[in-house]
Structure formats: structure tokens, C-alpha cells
Image (tube, rainbow, N blue to C red; front, side, top):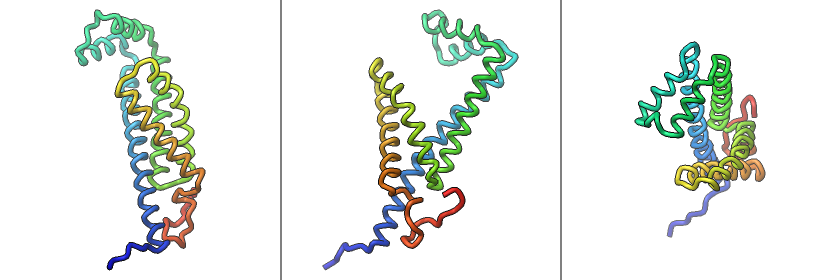
Amino acid sequence: MYSTVHSTAELSGLRRDHTLQALRGIATIELAKGLVVLGAALVIIFWVHRDPWDFADSLLRLLHISPDGHFAQRFLDWADTLTDAKLWAIAGAGLAYSVLRFLEAYGLWYARAWAEWIALISGSLYLPYEIYKLAHRQNWFHIVVLTVNLAIVVYMAYLLKTGKGIHHISPANNWIEPGPGR
């Protein structure tokens, strides 16, 4: 008869693989968020010294949204108030956000403790807003965003509270060797 008894080292290796896979999945999400915002920031920089109203109008037409609608008109009015200084400020905030997401993605990919803290804190900061949006406009998008973010926050809290993150395990248990920043 076959026995499924595993040694402690084997179980540690399985837990390590699962934890690293989860962290790398979250890192991929953070990288994607950073790339999207970086792309948006670059588009905004491209439109400095140009008419933002023209860009907003082109965007509405690209998305096949009538510029005569109420919200489209409000969007065009808002675009008309943008100055070069405001565009630079928005682009700068987007670039800073992207850098934070890229750092978090790097740290999570390589299982750094500081990245788990960044993921926990930044994810927690979004929760009140996501709950508010879901309470006022229930749709699948808001449900998915809240669920994914809540899962990430709970998982990071679990890793940090229980000490089951990769950085907490000694190399004697066949875990990743500690490197700089651990």
C-alpha cells in the first residue's frame, strides 16, 4: 500500500511554492496596474502644450460616445479647464503611482517583506472607496475589484501576522536564501 506521509522539508517546499506562486500572481496584477497608469501618464505628457478639449473630444469619438450627452459635455467642460501645469501635475502623480506599483511588483516577485507591507497598506487604503462605489453602483466590475483587493489584503495580513511569508523561514527548511533587503 502507498503512504502519503510527507517530511517536514517536503511540506515546507510545497508551502514555499504555493506562497511564491501567490505572491507572483499579485506582483503581476501590480505590474499591470503600473503599466496602465504609466501609459496614461505618457499620453497626458504628450498632450502638454496642446488643447486638452481636442483630446477629450477625440477620445469620446474614438469610444463612440456622443459629445452631446450630459456626462460627455461635463467631461469636455472639465478638459477645457486643464492647464499645462495641471497636466504636468496629473502626469507626475501617475508616474509616482507607477513607480510605487513597479517597486511593489518587484518586491512581491522576489518575496520581500517590505513589499508585503506595501501591498497590505496600499490595498487597505482602497477598500473604503471600493466599498463606497459598490454601495452606490452595484455592478460586476465593482464586485470583482473589491473581491480581488480584499483577497489580496487578507492574504498579505495572513502572511505578515502568521509569519508564513517566505522571508520568515530559515534556509535550513529549503527556502530561498536571504538576500539584500530581507
